[in-house]
Structure formats: C-alpha cells, structure tokens
Length: 508
Image (cartoon, rainbow, N blue to C red; front, side, top):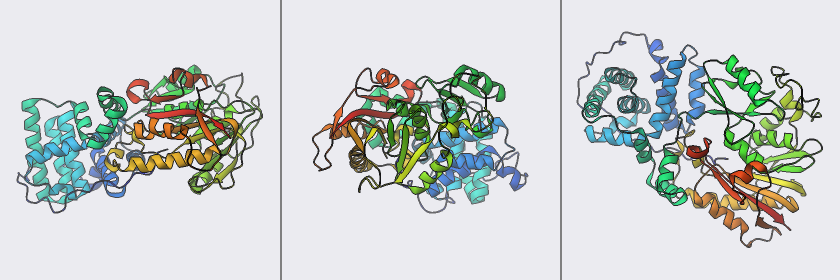
C-alpha cells in the first residue's frame, strides 16, 4: 500500500496584480449568478486542484466528493472536469514553465484557485482539441477573476492569449512529452534506472486518464454473464474483461459502483493489479493465511474465498480504524461454497441481495500491530503471509498524479528500510516452509529488487527466520514471472497500475 505522501510544493507568494493585460475580455457567461458558475465543470475541477495543492488531498477522492456535490453535471461535463484535474496534475511542471516564459511575474500561484484556473486554461489551449481557444481563455479568465479579482483576471487574460498565440503559431505540443517533462528529475532518473529510458517515458505517459476502475468477481461468478449484465445496466459506460486477473472486469465511465447490480454481492471494487498480487500468494483451501498489511481488506476478501473450505484468513494493520472498516465489511461467518452461491447455478443469482460477499468472505481475526516494533498478538504457524508493504506509491501515478509532487528522492531509503523491517517481522509468523509474498505498488528498483535482495541476504537481526527466494506456485504469478521468483506489473504493458511482487519460502 502507498505510504502517506508528503505535502505538496507551495506556490510563490504575493499578488498577481502586476501582470499586464486587458481585464475587459468578453465573457459570455459574465452575467451568470455565482451558484450557476460554481456548478460548471471547471469550477469543480478548480476546487479539486485547490484541495490537492492546499490540503494534501488525493485527487481521486476530492474529485469524487466534488462530483457528488454537483449531481446536475451531465456526463460530458463530468468527463471534462475529470480530464482537467488529471491533466493539469500530470502536466503541471510543463504548463507552469510555459507560463513562466510569458508572464512578467509568478505571483499568480499564491492563490490555489487562481492557479487552478490559469493552468486549466493553459492545459485546454495546449492539449484539448474539443475546446475552442476563445472558450478556454474566457472560462479561465472568468474563474481567475472570480477567485482573485479584476487584476488577476487581467493577468489570466494576458498570459493565456499569449499561450493561445504560441499554440496557433507552433501547433499543440505532445501531451506525453509534457507529462514526462513535468515529473521531478529524481523520479525520471529512478524510473530510467529501474525500467530503462524508453520504458520509463512510457510508464510516465501511460493512459488512459483517468484510469479505469477494477471489479473483482467472486469465485464461480461467470465473467461473460456479468459483462452482459453490467453493460445493460449502464449502457453509456464501458465494461471489458481484465487482461491479467481472470476475475477482473475493467470499467470506464461507470460512475458510483454502488449503484450497479452485484456490488458487494457478486463482486467488489478492486484494481486489477491488486487482484493479481493477492492471487500471487497462491492461497489454497484449508490453509491459514495472514494478510499482514491489510488496510481496508480488499485483498483479505479475495484471500478468504481462496482458503475455503476449511481455511482461515487473519488480517493485521498498523491503523485500527482501517481494521474496524474491514471487520464491518467482512464480519459474517463463512458459509459453505454451495450456500454462498459460489459454485454452479445462475451466476447472477443474488446480484442485488448483498449477501454473497459477506457470507463467503470471512476474516477470522484482526490485529493492530506495528511490525517495526514487534509482532504483537499475531500468532505463529501461518501457511502463507502477504506483505503489501507501505511504499512510495509511484506505481499508482496515473491514478494519483499528485504523488509526483509530494515524493522526494530521500523518501526511498527510508521506505526501503521500513519494508525490510515489516517483511522480516511478518515472516516470523509463518511456519517453517511457509510462503511469503513481498509486494509494493511501486516500480522503482530501490523498493523492488533491492528490497527483495536484502530480504534474501543473511539477516543481521535475531528473529530466527531466513527468506529463500522461490518460484511462485500460483498459475497467474508463474506466467507473470516467467517461472521466476519476482514480477512487475506496468500500466503501459499490462493495463494495470504498477506493482512488484517477490516470493519467498520461510525457513526457521
């Protein structure tokens, strides 16, 4: 799981009043009442960006919250707001550099809402074919003036007219190049060392934006049947079979998943690559499994189905609040596979009943534990242990572009030490010969191969366990790892977020 990212970089201080330009630019909607303007897609996107920059919010969560407050937005406006949020965050560095070449002063960045409207205007001019230049300038001037007053509006008008003229003269720049150029230098270097130059650039510019939503079907559910049912329920959305997970459905434009048939009953929302990590553990019926960094429990849900009948899954996490959510979601005792509807019969049966997931996905015990200090009350003897460790979250950049603005090179050694400490302590809970999967939502060598090598090296602690690299024994992971003991998932190759996983046998 991604380690909580640091605060974003602040803008320059001062006011934007020193910039030249004509404050009297014609604005078709200048007479619109404030509430009407606030419900526009650019106003929604601006508030999201301001929260990302000003309060360390995650863009996806902030956007969801703002869209719920604007239910009157039609799907096209929702799509525009979404593209503006993700597009500005991904290309922010390049956009700000272009504006800096044209503006006399950089004080416009002091107010997050002004900054958002100016950058959205520049993004529209540079990268959105469907937005006429005059409309992009007019909308940005309206937003900037509403946020910062007439002098700020004059600045936005002047600088965006210059951007529009430059684009008209030289053509639109490639978005992929702007995204790559906007990544911090340390991140570009780390990705090149980890993936190679071409793959690093492909990773940074990978789409689609925003990324799709993953659905994970319960065992026994017919994916083709559910594809038909979901397409019928939401004909304006796109539903396709996943490429990596055999139970994944990839959704685009589906809106709130809770409104779709089968949610919480036949399937849950889970990114496809995260599903592959859980499958990589190779949990089997009758086994005892520990989800050592369980978070809110989506992987626990999947693992708990894999160990039936006769097995058990326990979940541990540093944060008690997450465990409380997990217990609330996965609190019912397990039913037999037949009673849960997981085997045979109509795959769509009970799609609206909400009982299948609860009845068949049971976490036996939860433990609040700081693995860097000790194992707490977590017992020994597990057959398999999954360590989805805290990390930089770089693998989720297309879903959380703000991470690039918050991480620093110095984070990597700290996180690597944390990952090693957690994995080694969690390994003490496995039986001799048990298996452990170390996983991160990162693709950086410092958090991937380098950590796996440290785990396999002779230990300097006195925990009494050794970790031996071993081939995966789950089919999906064997294919991804080409028979080896580690694999990467990459958005431009697999269509998932970026992950790394390595398999070990625990020796005591």
